[in-house]
Image 1: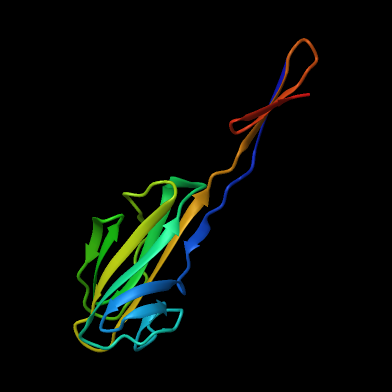
Image 2: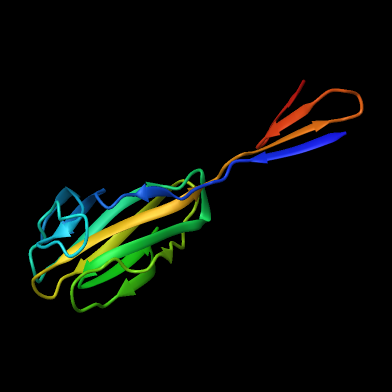
Length: 165
């Protein structure tokens, strides 16, 4: 009997890019493209103006079907504060003074395979202001297993599907 394992090397993929669109309520209302702000402390430059001394409630969805949930991470650049909710549960917050910079990559918790709701309450406490977020994760790659038993037939299994040749 011969046994072979073949697996592709998975790489991190962008799930929510920095220029994603968000449903926004607060000082502006509608469907707008990130980043939000009135200056450019980091790349990319703002696509949507964010009036100083205001709060934005930003909501978007990400589909995590086909991703290894243990690898999904987020990163936020904010001037000043944010509170992050995933599927209605608060998972993070930051009170920050000074110019925005990209923060550390943090595991995105409270997720599940399929569509997940991401909500950010972004608060500005004086000009200038800036908000952006990105999410990355590693796609799940199928493992191919081929087994040749003593009778000469070969069983090939990809995920849950099996074929005999």
